[in-house]
Image 1 (cartoon, rainbow, N blue to C red):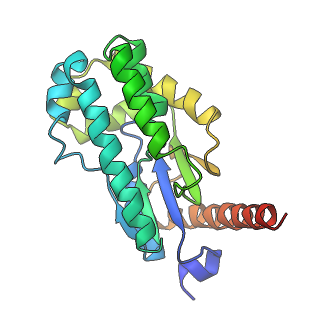
Image 2 (tube, helix red, strand yellow):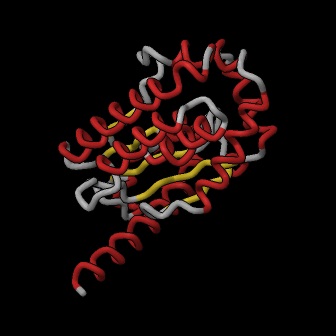
Length: 227
Protein backbone atom coordinates (compact mmCIF):
# COMPACT_ATOMS: atom_id res chain seq x y z
CA UNK A 1 0.00 0.00 0.00
CA UNK A 2 1.44 3.37 -1.01
CA UNK A 3 1.36 6.51 1.12
CA UNK A 4 -1.65 7.97 -0.70
CA UNK A 5 -3.74 4.90 0.08
CA UNK A 6 -2.40 4.55 3.61
CA UNK A 7 -3.32 8.08 4.58
CA UNK A 8 -6.41 8.46 2.41
CA UNK A 9 -5.05 11.22 0.17
CA UNK A 10 -6.83 11.27 -3.24
CA UNK A 11 -4.59 10.99 -6.29
CA UNK A 12 -5.99 14.23 -7.74
CA UNK A 13 -5.33 16.37 -4.65
CA UNK A 14 -3.80 19.82 -4.98
CA UNK A 15 -1.86 20.97 -1.91
CA UNK A 16 -0.31 24.41 -1.60
CA UNK A 17 2.53 25.26 0.81
CA UNK A 18 2.56 28.78 2.26
CA UNK A 19 4.72 30.68 4.73
CA UNK A 20 7.22 33.49 4.98
CA UNK A 21 10.65 33.48 3.34
CA UNK A 22 13.03 30.91 4.81
CA UNK A 23 10.42 28.77 6.56
CA UNK A 24 11.10 25.68 4.43
CA UNK A 25 8.38 25.65 1.77
CA UNK A 26 10.58 24.10 -0.93
CA UNK A 27 11.79 21.34 1.41
CA UNK A 28 8.22 20.48 2.43
CA UNK A 29 7.08 20.56 -1.19
CA UNK A 30 9.74 18.05 -2.24
CA UNK A 31 9.16 15.79 0.76
CA UNK A 32 5.41 15.58 0.16
CA UNK A 33 5.81 15.06 -3.58
CA UNK A 34 8.30 12.24 -2.99
CA UNK A 35 6.06 10.56 -0.42
CA UNK A 36 2.89 10.85 -2.52
CA UNK A 37 4.42 10.55 -6.02
CA UNK A 38 2.89 13.93 -6.91
CA UNK A 39 4.22 16.49 -9.35
CA UNK A 40 5.74 19.68 -7.97
CA UNK A 41 5.14 23.31 -8.81
CA UNK A 42 7.98 25.50 -7.58
CA UNK A 43 8.11 29.27 -7.44
CA UNK A 44 10.21 30.58 -10.34
CA UNK A 45 12.74 32.68 -8.42
CA UNK A 46 15.86 32.31 -10.55
CA UNK A 47 14.10 33.23 -13.81
CA UNK A 48 12.25 36.25 -12.40
CA UNK A 49 13.56 39.29 -14.33
CA UNK A 50 12.53 41.76 -11.62
CA UNK A 51 13.66 40.16 -8.39
CA UNK A 52 17.24 41.47 -8.18
CA UNK A 53 16.12 44.94 -9.28
CA UNK A 54 13.32 44.88 -6.69
CA UNK A 55 15.66 44.18 -3.78
CA UNK A 56 17.76 47.21 -4.77
CA UNK A 57 14.81 49.57 -5.32
CA UNK A 58 11.49 48.54 -3.76
CA UNK A 59 9.59 51.62 -4.91
CA UNK A 60 10.65 51.39 -8.55
CA UNK A 61 9.98 47.69 -9.08
CA UNK A 62 7.29 46.49 -6.60
CA UNK A 63 4.39 46.81 -9.07
CA UNK A 64 6.30 45.07 -11.88
CA UNK A 65 7.32 42.26 -9.53
CA UNK A 66 3.76 41.66 -8.29
CA UNK A 67 2.26 41.63 -11.78
CA UNK A 68 4.90 39.13 -12.91
CA UNK A 69 4.21 36.84 -9.94
CA UNK A 70 0.45 37.06 -10.44
CA UNK A 71 0.66 36.12 -14.11
CA UNK A 72 3.08 33.23 -13.50
CA UNK A 73 1.09 31.79 -10.60
CA UNK A 74 -2.20 32.06 -12.48
CA UNK A 75 -0.73 30.18 -15.45
CA UNK A 76 0.71 27.57 -13.11
CA UNK A 77 -2.61 27.11 -11.30
CA UNK A 78 -4.37 26.60 -14.62
CA UNK A 79 -1.77 24.01 -15.68
CA UNK A 80 -2.09 22.10 -12.40
CA UNK A 81 -5.81 21.57 -12.80
CA UNK A 82 -5.55 20.81 -16.52
CA UNK A 83 -3.25 17.94 -15.52
CA UNK A 84 -6.00 16.67 -13.22
CA UNK A 85 -4.35 17.52 -9.92
CA UNK A 86 -1.80 15.41 -8.09
CA UNK A 87 0.40 18.43 -7.31
CA UNK A 88 2.29 19.99 -4.42
CA UNK A 89 2.63 23.74 -4.97
CA UNK A 90 5.39 25.90 -3.47
CA UNK A 91 3.74 29.20 -2.37
CA UNK A 92 0.17 30.27 -3.05
CA UNK A 93 -1.30 32.90 -5.33
CA UNK A 94 -3.23 34.32 -2.34
CA UNK A 95 -0.08 35.60 -0.65
CA UNK A 96 0.63 37.96 -3.53
CA UNK A 97 -2.26 40.28 -2.77
CA UNK A 98 -2.84 39.47 0.91
CA UNK A 99 0.74 40.16 1.95
CA UNK A 100 3.20 41.49 -0.62
CA UNK A 101 1.19 43.97 -2.69
CA UNK A 102 -0.61 45.22 0.40
CA UNK A 103 2.65 45.66 2.31
CA UNK A 104 4.34 47.62 -0.46
CA UNK A 105 1.33 49.86 -0.90
CA UNK A 106 1.10 50.63 2.82
CA UNK A 107 4.83 51.29 3.05
CA UNK A 108 4.72 53.70 0.11
CA UNK A 109 6.52 51.45 -2.36
CA UNK A 110 3.47 51.11 -4.62
CA UNK A 111 1.26 54.02 -5.66
CA UNK A 112 -2.49 54.00 -5.05
CA UNK A 113 -3.13 53.77 -8.79
CA UNK A 114 -0.78 50.80 -9.21
CA UNK A 115 -2.25 49.07 -6.15
CA UNK A 116 -5.82 49.55 -7.39
CA UNK A 117 -4.82 48.19 -10.81
CA UNK A 118 -3.15 45.17 -9.25
CA UNK A 119 -6.00 44.29 -6.85
CA UNK A 120 -8.60 44.75 -9.60
CA UNK A 121 -6.69 42.32 -11.81
CA UNK A 122 -6.23 39.84 -8.96
CA UNK A 123 -9.95 39.87 -8.12
CA UNK A 124 -10.91 39.36 -11.76
CA UNK A 125 -8.55 36.39 -12.10
CA UNK A 126 -8.78 34.67 -8.71
CA UNK A 127 -11.78 35.75 -6.68
CA UNK A 128 -14.39 34.11 -8.91
CA UNK A 129 -16.35 30.82 -8.69
CA UNK A 130 -14.42 29.55 -11.71
CA UNK A 131 -10.96 29.74 -10.17
CA UNK A 132 -9.81 26.27 -8.98
CA UNK A 133 -8.80 26.53 -5.31
CA UNK A 134 -6.52 23.89 -3.74
CA UNK A 135 -7.81 21.08 -1.52
CA UNK A 136 -5.52 22.21 1.28
CA UNK A 137 -3.13 25.01 2.16
CA UNK A 138 -0.33 23.96 4.51
CA UNK A 139 0.92 26.97 6.45
CA UNK A 140 4.46 26.59 7.81
CA UNK A 141 5.16 28.69 10.88
CA UNK A 142 7.87 29.11 13.48
CA UNK A 143 9.60 31.67 15.69
CA UNK A 144 11.05 34.74 14.00
CA UNK A 145 14.52 33.80 15.31
CA UNK A 146 14.37 30.35 13.71
CA UNK A 147 13.29 31.79 10.39
CA UNK A 148 16.06 34.41 10.35
CA UNK A 149 18.59 31.66 11.08
CA UNK A 150 17.33 29.71 8.06
CA UNK A 151 17.58 32.76 5.79
CA UNK A 152 21.19 33.26 6.88
CA UNK A 153 22.00 29.57 6.41
CA UNK A 154 20.89 29.41 2.79
CA UNK A 155 22.90 32.53 2.00
CA UNK A 156 21.14 34.06 -1.01
CA UNK A 157 23.01 37.35 -1.63
CA UNK A 158 19.91 39.48 -2.29
CA UNK A 159 18.35 38.22 0.96
CA UNK A 160 21.51 38.84 2.99
CA UNK A 161 21.52 42.48 1.86
CA UNK A 162 17.91 43.02 2.97
CA UNK A 163 17.46 44.71 6.38
CA UNK A 164 16.19 42.42 9.15
CA UNK A 165 13.34 44.89 9.72
CA UNK A 166 11.91 43.87 6.35
CA UNK A 167 11.81 40.19 7.34
CA UNK A 168 10.21 41.09 10.68
CA UNK A 169 7.54 43.11 8.91
CA UNK A 170 6.82 40.21 6.56
CA UNK A 171 6.71 37.73 9.45
CA UNK A 172 4.03 39.76 11.25
CA UNK A 173 2.02 40.24 8.09
CA UNK A 174 2.02 36.50 7.39
CA UNK A 175 0.69 35.79 10.87
CA UNK A 176 -2.11 38.34 10.40
CA UNK A 177 -2.89 37.05 6.92
CA UNK A 178 -3.26 33.38 7.85
CA UNK A 179 -5.52 34.22 10.79
CA UNK A 180 -8.03 35.67 8.31
CA UNK A 181 -7.51 33.31 5.36
CA UNK A 182 -10.60 31.34 4.27
CA UNK A 183 -10.23 30.50 0.55
CA UNK A 184 -9.54 26.83 1.31
CA UNK A 185 -8.88 24.57 4.35
CA UNK A 186 -5.66 25.34 6.28
CA UNK A 187 -3.29 22.99 8.10
CA UNK A 188 -0.80 24.85 10.30
CA UNK A 189 2.56 23.13 10.94
CA UNK A 190 5.30 24.41 13.23
CA UNK A 191 8.79 23.95 11.79
CA UNK A 192 10.06 22.94 15.25
CA UNK A 193 7.90 19.79 15.15
CA UNK A 194 9.70 18.08 12.25
CA UNK A 195 13.12 17.98 10.57
CA UNK A 196 12.84 16.72 7.01
CA UNK A 197 16.52 17.32 6.25
CA UNK A 198 17.80 15.16 9.11
CA UNK A 199 14.97 12.62 9.46
CA UNK A 200 12.74 11.81 6.47
CA UNK A 201 10.33 9.81 8.66
CA UNK A 202 9.06 13.04 10.25
CA UNK A 203 6.91 13.42 7.10
CA UNK A 204 4.68 10.56 8.32
CA UNK A 205 2.64 12.53 10.92
CA UNK A 206 2.36 15.35 8.38
CA UNK A 207 0.85 12.94 5.83
CA UNK A 208 -1.62 11.67 8.42
CA UNK A 209 -2.82 15.22 9.10
CA UNK A 210 -2.99 16.03 5.39
CA UNK A 211 -5.17 12.99 4.71
CA UNK A 212 -7.54 13.86 7.53
CA UNK A 213 -7.89 17.50 6.43
CA UNK A 214 -8.53 16.66 2.77
CA UNK A 215 -11.09 13.97 3.60
CA UNK A 216 -12.99 16.38 5.86
CA UNK A 217 -12.78 19.11 3.24
CA UNK A 218 -14.20 16.94 0.47
CA UNK A 219 -17.01 15.68 2.71
CA UNK A 220 -17.91 19.31 3.48
CA UNK A 221 -17.88 20.27 -0.20
CA UNK A 222 -20.00 17.27 -1.17
CA UNK A 223 -22.62 17.96 1.50
CA UNK A 224 -22.90 21.61 0.44
CA UNK A 225 -23.21 20.70 -3.24
CA UNK A 226 -25.99 18.24 -2.45
CA UNK A 227 -27.97 20.74 -0.41
